[in-house]
Image (cartoon, helix red, strand yellow):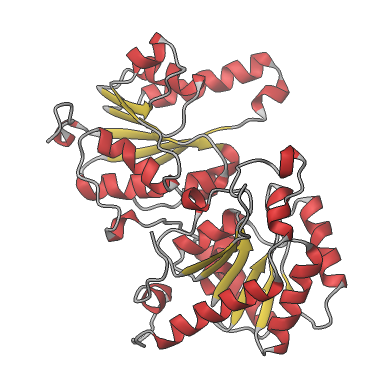
Amino acid sequence: MLKDAIDLGRVQRALVVRLMFHGDVLLSTPVVTTLKEMAPHINIDALVYHETRDMLSLHPDLDQVFTIDRNWKKQGVSFQLRQEWRLLSALRARHYDLVVILNDSNRATWLVKLLSPRWSVGPDNPGRGRLYRKTMTHRFQLARNRHMVELHLDALRCLGLPVDSSAAHARLSIVSGAGAEASVENHLSVHALQPGNFVLVHPGSRGVYKCWPESKMARLIDTLSVQGIRVVLSGSPAAAELEMLVRIKAQLAHPVVDLSGQLSLKELAALVAQSAMLIGVDSLPVHLASACQVPVVALFGPSLEQVWAPWRTPHRIVGATLPCRPCGLAGCGGSGQSDCMDKISVQEVLDAVQSLRQTLEIAPQHHRTDRASRTQFVRVDKH
């Protein structure tokens, strides 16, 4: 046991804080499930931004999900301060013994200071001053090119806890809920689709520099259709993404089912869970597929696939071989345009799809009663 190891027997309540985007929050779920597995008696809460709450709501290992609404500040300083005080009061009433901070921020520093837990852990940022370093009882180092799930779990390792990232409880997890599942079943019924008999293609991303050229995406979809594969399109309600999908569909010679802009985040997760495979770029659906144990073909450009690759689900990653990739920039020179995405060929993606399909077809065929039993026996390119 490490010198600074904490005693989980003395922890009654813990708070996990991840104030970032949807995918980041989903990638933090192994921290929750691992901690619960180690100490089932602990009541675990989470604090996230309000718009990402659906990544954690209904999670069986969480007692409460607290949120910060970034729209508070739009309603004036007085309103924002009242909301911040209500949140702080609610958190202090929980009397946390342990606070796990997964991303460095000024808010996190003051939060730990004000909550005064027995133990706290956060990223070791050398640029931080004495206040931050004195506030955290433990600090974990951030290693470059380490998968984000492993980085999150390093927070628990830093506390002296025996973390096994290959264990079943260290998977990504999301609960869609009965309502979302029923809604997706209705969508599939309307289009005469059965679970597992379609490929879900999600072309969009929050960052346009991560997207593949629309003409190539259209050619890929048409080729899959010619091969007899039913294709379903998905996309966020964002105007730019919906416009992109309109342009892609205008180039198609074969019909597809388009559910873009029609699904909530929970419904998107339920749809991913019913698909045979997901094809997409570096964006949230790739991580939803990991959580649902769905095979993935992921197209990567500037992003570090070592950090953001599908986690413990069968997958193939397609990326151009360039000396500058991955650079981590928002397009070449920060332009929003990525040559490394443009250079990925349609044939390379088709080859990846075929390779993954062949691997899945030769895997042992067990009795399939649900999504988990249908996919867990396959391990391809997993972390």
